[in-house]
Image (cartoon, rainbow, N blue to C red; front, top):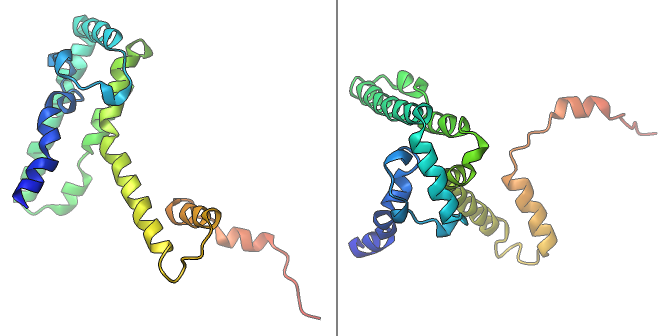
Amino acid sequence: MKDGFAERFEKFETNKSTLAFIVNPLNTNTNEINIELFGIDAGSLQMQLLDLKTKDLWIGKFTELKSKLEELEVQKCMHISQHKWRALKETPRVEALIFGTWNSLPECYSEVKKLAYGVLTIFGSTYSCEQAFSCMNIIKSKVRSQLTNKNLESCLKLKTTIYKPDLIKLSKCIQSQYSH
């Protein structure tokens, strides 16, 4: 089992620089970043990253991000040690701070942003795929093995959507039919 975990998480070690890029792009060596996963032009990425490293505004933004993240971790540890669970829930989300910083970058850094967003969405997209696959397995059980692909697709859309219809409003719009 230990070997299985080591093998599975081996890629995290090899992609350490790529994963660290999202909070520390200014100290990243572009030769250590795995850009193959994201369809990024290496030359453009290097030029944009060099330009980013020369601008005091962006150096300040990413330095501020790192200090805010450190501060946030200290706050979380304090809340946990003092069993202040409500205060822990109310602390700002790490993702919001990171996305806020990357969203403030102008479009002239498109390749840098593409890499950052690619790294930030790796885990979320994997979770969504796993969740959809689990839903499909539940829907297409042995009892319902005769489902067509179209019906299965419809059931999956219903199961995985976040849409919540306003049933009260809809029911008020429908004219009731009384029996004769």
